[in-house]
Length: 230
Length: 246
Ligand SMILES: Nc1ncnc2c1ncn2[C@@H]1O[C@H](COP(=O)(O)OP(=O)(O)OP(=O)(O)O)[C@@H](O)[C@H]1O
Ligand SMILES: [Mg+2]
Image 1 (cartoon, each protein chain N blue to C red):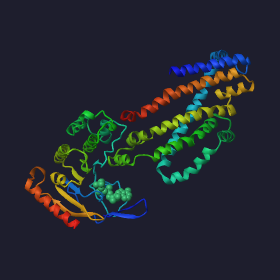
Image 2: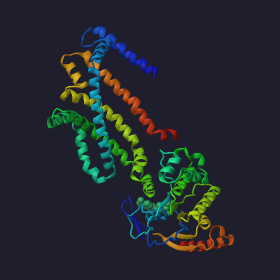
Image 3: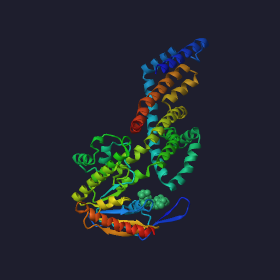
Image 4: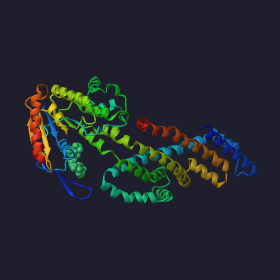
């Protein structure tokens, strides 16, 4: 597909061209690329928020999207718990509390979003996406601005959820190590206008991964990036 | 609070002194006004007229707020509707209240419908403009969030849209109420045979200032009470999440 923006100054800026991929069900797909290359743009097109593009997106019938935006986007006038409830009216109270506990925000359910740190707010946004019991989970850099240990822990929570519910996941990140650690499939975004310049299927993802294998993938990715820069 | 009460007492004292100096029925003493008030209250006329006027205030205010909110949201969201509606708004905003009132009475007749419509029409453009301002500043990110999470329209209305509009609704309520309760008296004076405005008109014809004040003061008191015990708490309630974050 192709996507061009008409900027405020009137010029047309092409952001994506020949962008094409397919996502296997039940896997974690990481979209990796530098800042400003069109990762968020691609996500918005995939989940149907942006319909002004050329090409097509096919989602299976009955797709239920759980989304973590790049900013938390919580309703500031509702408590954390109400934010979860409103997004996931069908989730049971016990379920919401369990998700909140897993993500370490159980103590903040009565707070208003304005009373949370950015890291806590990000976790609420994550909890909200988990709570709707999605079959398509879309995350736009969900772990930035968290300290490394917490990012690691939340990554593990994400993995646990995906392995438990087999939800198809599209994870945008600019952190290659994070992508290698979490994903089954890595897509590298590059070029201007951007497209997917390389694709890696991880044969031994996550728990099955050895340090050796991770290093090998990383070297491959590094080679592609070096080539793109050259 | 104490200072406010003192200042109010001072006002009454000045009134008392002035009326003693003037010694004229055109400036009656406070107690004389209270006397008339009690007389009208005992006959039931005071409550009947106050009630009638308040009902007119309530209905026309509700009409104006409802349609003002509706038009304001529509015009704030759609450029086309905004272009279409804007000239109408400008005309309505600049039409003197008196013109609207007289036209309503001429075209519809000297009825309550005409009276209420005239008041509502006077308030409508203000409400629309205020709410439109709110609708223009809606958070697109939250709307996208609501779309992605497939929130039903009731949820979006109650939890996404209205909380963002609430400060504007509160502002429109506050300014609207003060417009409505002033205009409603003129409307009654011109074309109704009951209500506070009508009684004030009667008092004016015979220069009965005591009667005039006996109706005007309780009415003002009630409107102020509504303002401070209903409107202001409502404003605080809708912005409580903001206060907490401060
Ligand atoms: N509404 C818009 N109008 C014009 N240009 C836009 C618009 N939105 C995004 N762009 C441009 O599209 C490009 C891609 O933006 P996008 O937000 O998708 O980047 P990103 O890869 O998500 O970056 P980051 O990692 O910083 O979030 C940028 O060059 C940006 O300037
Ligand atoms: Mg982005």
